[in-house]
Image (cartoon, rainbow, N blue to C red; front, side, top):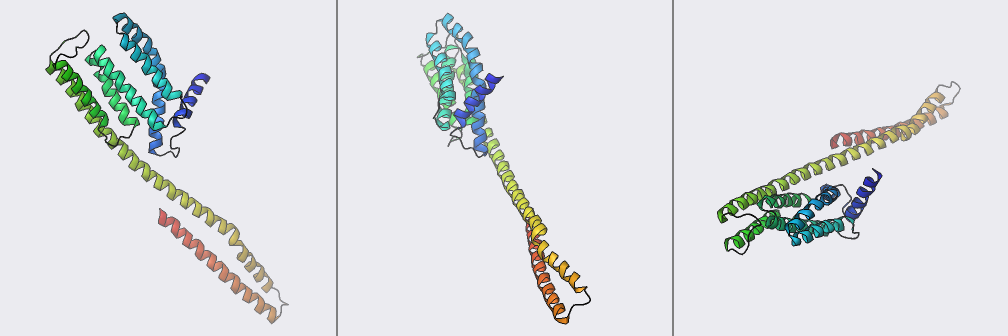
Length: 279
């Protein structure tokens, strides 16, 4: 458990060190990328062993190199310090597509699922200027494979089928890829809108709390001064042996203190109205 926590901390520290730490939506997108790396590394290492055994047993030595390189690149992305998170993401996405491209050739068309997964992860972790970029990559890869197969420049390992079957399979991949690229950005747009609304609401609450604190301070400190003075002056007026001059002095001061208290109360009322106006 301690090792796992240190492992998570190391990746988070390396990946998010150059990320925006203001907890906005972009930060959570970056955090999602770091979590992807956290879980994909142990899973990738576990699946690497049977993959290498299969590739060596089948004589697919280039696939051995591709698998090893892919895992090493992910480790590099996760643990290499000083790399901007944007470059980490692009390297990660490129690595996914190279691996998927190779798996289709060596394993078969079932590996088009890797292209679909690559599209899904790409849209989730990276904000492309053209939101359909991952889907277009899948389209280009599909077009390359279909063209090469049609002109007999390539053949898939241990399987043969007509170009029309190939087109049908890749068409479904392209359709789903464009669907993902259409829907997920909409989800992020809605989340961003809700996040901005929550942010504005939080700022309003903070402002209201500050006003309430200020009002509380005024009531407990500022109001106390003229009020105490008024109480003291009224007590002095109860004295029977005070002169007319002293009485006039006390009354003048009562008027002054009353005016001060009135101004303070008006200020409190104004601040209270501002609190309600912010709601």
